[in-house]
Length: 235
Image (cartoon, rainbow, N blue to C red; front, top):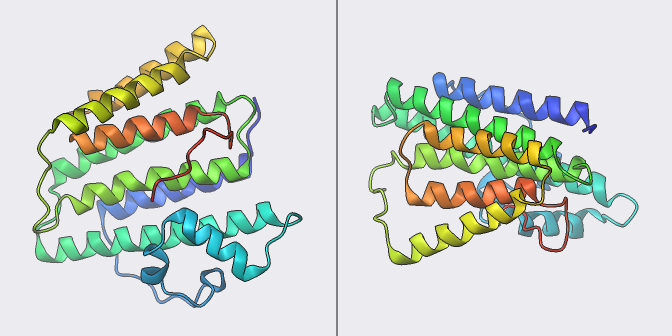
């Protein structure tokens, strides 16, 4: 099944850049204002959810039916850049205070992220109908939450959550929904994707919040692109 090769290459490059940033946070380079931010700062943009920002972008750029897809891709790209910039800034701040993840934790996270990206690539390739540019861009944005959550968990005052019945129930429901999506696939694809998803959990223990996010993310990747029951990134 053919996917947009250029977009997948761009996603891969973005993820590779993220991995390098994890290994060695660099000082930010001066950048010219991004016209796609419509005069707003990243702080202002990230106060909106990605969906609120996309709606705001459309209303303020005259996006219409003829250029809706192009406008949506530009708005997602602007949000991704702001999201990455916030994560990079947090990584640098933690490195300066020596409160950030240690080398072993960084290595584990790189392994975790590689497994997540592998599952995402396989799931999107198995999509029927094929995942278009918009859906691929949404999936790449959706994946960004894990790196931000990894660094955020090292901030002072942020403590690992304790398991609660509500969270456990939510994980159970999300797991069932993920299983239902898997069951719609041909048997060979089902086995391949189930194995790829299991490898994420093989990396090591994770919090309930991460488990819940993983099941929602995996279900998104397995959904029919932009069908009525497909939920875009929840942030």
